[in-house]
Image (cartoon, rainbow, N blue to C red; front, side):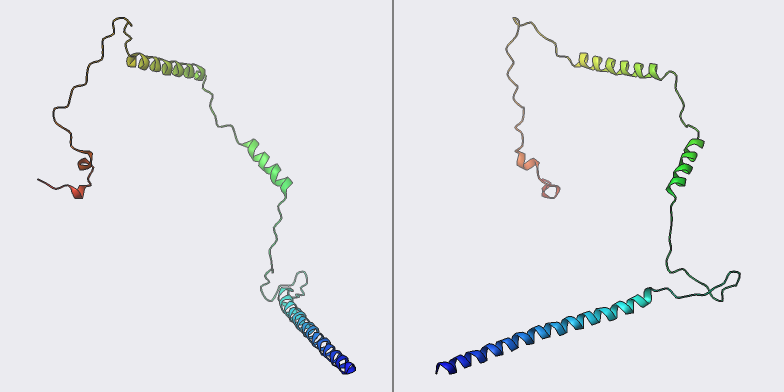
Length: 162
């Protein structure tokens, strides 16, 4: 009986091993299909990027218009900087010196300080001697009672004519 059980266990192990092999084979097949698809796409796209071969000889007129597949630009930084400096040197200065500028600035500053001093003198509160101070007067009561604030703050559509 024990031998049969062991034999049964061995069979189940072999079945599991086969199932594992089947999964790994499936993965290999899928990976190979993916790689093959990528290679096909690469070659199809690569064919579009390779320029067409044209054989021309010097002095012979081309039978059709030839257009470059891409453009290239080159900037010579050293020559560019030399020409910029030459352009800077050839342009004359565009400023004019004002000889009386210092005097005008000084006069403006003096005028500002004079205006401030005058404004302070006009706004100054007279100072009364300490011994002669009078008690403050009581505020006068208003002639008519004021309207409540809520009635004054209505929007235009809330006002009604009497």
